[in-house]
Length: 364
Image (cartoon, rainbow, N blue to C red; front, top):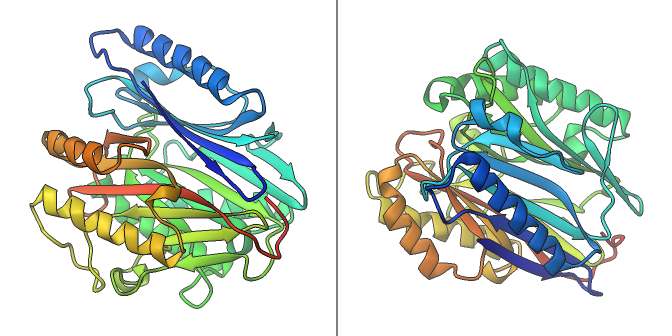
């Protein structure tokens, strides 16, 4: 099944988010992968030749046995073991942008030049065989050095990260400490800014990998162009409980606003889990928090291009699936098996949005 949503900037520039899933769980992995590839081809025909993929993420049920069978791609590709909870083996999220031209760089990341901006996408950064603290610190340090080579840095250029943590209940504290150490070294503090992020359970194909990271950065942004979105009446600053990420980050271009909402759960503005043990009410409070972040960025659900939903307990899938199908019939989403970083949170979601605007900045 193809779920897609097209968003249009001022002047007509288009972006498409698509989530592709399989309906028949009886198929083998090869059969399901073939169905995903066939639907991807149909998607490309539907959106037209000018739309190009800039980022893909494969969600697998058994990455150790499946990751090596995935097809090659001409854009940044993330691969994570987060099983689709409709009992299938594979799902795919694709972000497409009109007239995009991502090019693979010698360091493995993909760069896309548009005007004076350089968009950089890195997928699957990992450090096999070392613990979560050292892995996380080294991944962020390497990303800082890479961005400097392109004329940027973490503080001024990095917009969004995704951290996938094997055995998140055990290893997340090491990830937090490693990120905190790197951020302090590179000038990301409560007085400057952090980065929108999701830190969630997810496994690499290599069992010795404790954490892997995807990131999106933009070199060439001017002061004030990137803004932190916090919704303080609903959510507290993450530094109050020892972690370092922004609730959401927006970027204004001349023709559009991009909004990247971090992993968001049922939390209040004092950092407390709300509705412990109640999946239905946690889902509703999560939506309330995300809606507050959208509103602060002068966006609404109509601007959201995709939603990724993470569940700790697969037994909650039936309830959450019904709730999302009723609330968001026109937004692509997928529900995945992925424990959240605090055991009390039963569900978490993240999303991306785009809104047509007019500003003094250069067009996207």
